[in-house]
Length: 461
Picture (tube, one colour):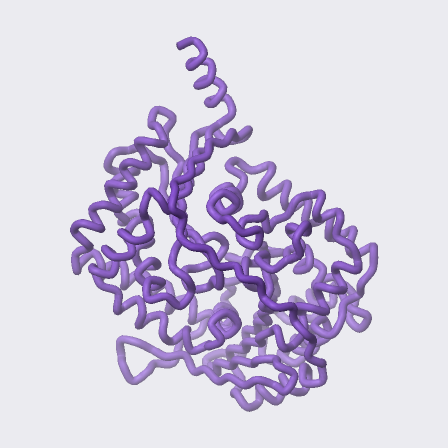
């Protein structure tokens, strides 16, 4: 949940640079250097001299999945509190230092990590590192800032969920229905009751337990060499003491064995919508890249099979899209869903729509995907990947995230090869294994008036 629009930040012109070409003209490799300081902080650097700009990301290995029980939304609340200042840098210091020099900063909370990102002229790098090290050391813990940010988060929930049609049901509610363990199925945005019950002791404990250097990765991409970046990391972060981190709970879950269907009423929606979700492969599985490609084949834009079949062809739905919860297909470290989301026409039933989805999936299982279609999808995916890596902000963040989740930032150089290696047989295999009715969770979200009309019709019948 970002503090400012992430899309606007990630497209910042300052972050766009050209990548260095590798020996293979069809693929380029990111320069990546990694060092772990004595206190456990891992530093990842990608040198790029094409502009006097740096992207910086500090990723902490804690997110919604590890927040305290009965404190839903706490990881997100804490992300906001990280911008409320320290004894050395009062509230507003981040914005003043970074935006005053022409840069931008942001933060977001995901299931398995929380990241804090900046992009700015390279001359601002040392002030940025000082600020990040300062809030890693301590925060200004007080009742006023806690109450203020509790109210801010509650208002964000009102604006983004409660007062929006569909209310994020395709990533909030669907996970609550599909997963069994609390770590995976609670609402990461948080309930108002849980948010209000968060105390200063909770905040202090969370910072102590999860915001130490040994539970963090610092990513730097841009106009600086690796050795100089390591020196600066040591200068600003090296004296911060490592802190014990609670043992990670077992969050693993098997695939589901029985379909689950839920119908929900929506006070604000004008047309019905459906979210269809399947549990997918664990991080690091050989099936992970094929699932990412399959998602694009099925619902990756106007040329995808679902769009051509459900939207343009049979005109059953108004749109079709896919998502991996709040993450990307390579940025998770626990049970995750591939979800298809569609608004559909009121004269169409959700059963009919899902039957057509099943038919599209069955065609992949039976016949696979042609070389031409697979080539088109891979080309689009690789283009999107390379474009994102041209942004110094996105590159620093991706490298830090991969180091945090995979313990290997070099995964960023492996993803393109994984995508290129996916075959039609791979798609047939993963579609047959994961996209089954037994492993499926469905939420049919209908306008409240539509449900009332349907109920009245049944009574009359």
